[in-house]
Image 1 (tube, one colour):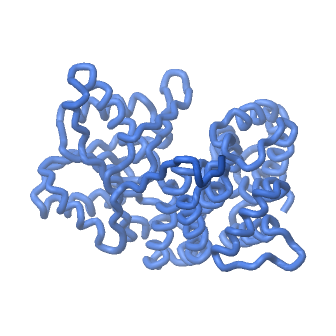
Image 2: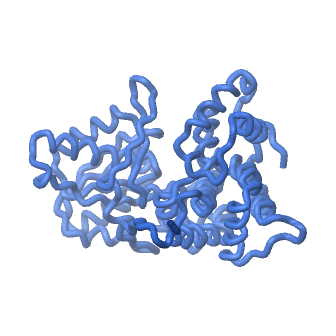
Image 3: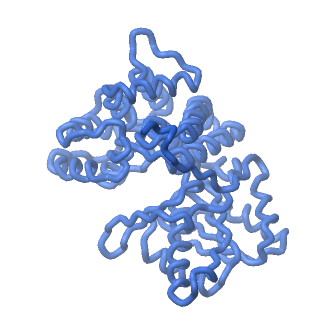
Length: 387
């Protein structure tokens, strides 16, 4: 049966407000009481004030849950659930990066489950969920899943539920104006990895490809400008849109081997996720290029963003050259050895890294399913470099 005769679904959610001043839309949701989930850095650097100023002017009562930590843990989520059950807000605002938004998703998920123990599901009403990202990277504001860490065992708990999809996303460029250049580069490369992997994934579809290709185009157009000038709000806004589009794409299509490797080496060497993705991406594109279908899709992606293949090169090789050039322009490392990570234990942990990368869920939709030997070779290149 052809794909055109197979019923498939594509969800377009949430409502998105974007551009300078979009944060003022917080006054228009008709809520009298809200909870803000954030971290102490948002308080320290005054970004929370930009939210509360709007709420104060609108006469909205709010309370702040600012216990979010990097890599959200179940104990923090449990505290947030208690907060929600006590305060009973009409809206939940997540302000911050992926950790804040994932924590808010976990709070909504477990609060909903707790309520259903005592109430008929038809009477369980979730608060209006508003995600306000302060980085242009994760795309978490438009996805319906989150990853929490069990604080006792250290086990990662992936959650996927439609209730965790935000109802509204607000992309305010001024909230990412103060992001340092290094973080801008790393989170921006996360966006690019989301977009390219979603475009060629085995789960791609016409809708996801449209979002992924536009996101790719915007990253190549705007990321370097953001890196060079943190006050370039036009480029910042462009990267926010790219991040959201890439999030919509991979939420539908899935990801690939670059994320499987990034999750693995990032956890082992305590490396920011975006940087780990950036290092893995060119090696993975090159590897996937051995597959005719993937090469065809890489060529279609180049065409969609208005780029011709380099003379005498494949589409995969052309895309690798573009990615590496962008990374070098932002002084990003091209392998773990070039980063600040201590890889002296690599040979010892290599078998474990291979096993973890092979088991990562994102590998399922990679265009080429690698053998363990292939994965080892990929990890060797990610560690020691080729480019």
